[in-house]
Amino acid sequence: MVDYKLYYWELPFRGIFIQLLLEDMGARYSRLDALEIYPAKSLSIHHPGMAPPYLYDCQRKKYFSQMPACLMHLAHRHDYLPKRPERLTLALKTLLDCNDVLMEITNSNGMLMWTPKRWEEFRYQRLADWMVLFENTGREHNLKDNRGFLLGSTLSVADIATTALFGTMVYSFPALKADLIECAPHIANLCQRIESRPAIQAFLTQHRSEYGRDYCGGQIEQSLRQMMNA
Image 1 (spheres, rainbow, N blue to C red):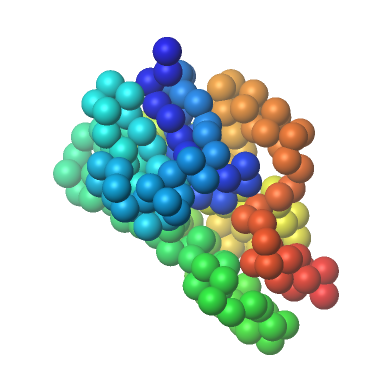
Image 2: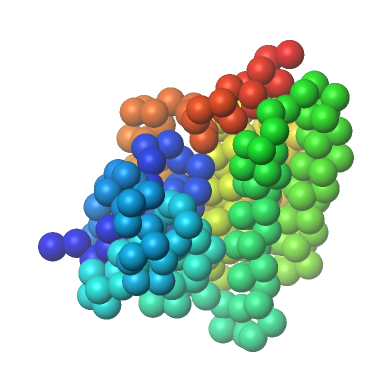
């Protein structure tokens, strides 16, 4: 008997955020093909969603969609949220920031393909600013090279999401690792520490062995890789 069902594609992208949290909390879950819901049933489920991921809470018999909302649901149920009201708000902000970065790195979810000029501007300006933003958030809460977390002294969903964002990004596109170390060295170190947590490390080892450096798939990923290889 599983506690949760996650409906997503085989690629990491948005699904990896939810999987890392499920793994770290030790939840019993199954990952199912998004086509079981999307698009035919996406408007008829509880709390309908336009696109994957979908999270089904087996105990409550309810579906949740939108990656930040799925994470907030799990974090609330399994005590991965900060206790202080301001930091609780910042945790939600972090999840929304992560979602924005995913939209931006895929050029508005593939509305346009990257050109070299636009990619260079994005990589060295907008994406660099995002990295600095996360770095500054951590520094404001005493994140150090080898200790602390994004929002203080306690692990939260914000750390899992930050790792799912940047850890996945630099693994899929190794050329961006130097960017992250330059712009956000404490975040780079945080991602390594979170990825070394036993349950997450075991999951990532298996997942990356199976799927390699795949990121988001399709023409969007092809466009990204063309920019990286240019």
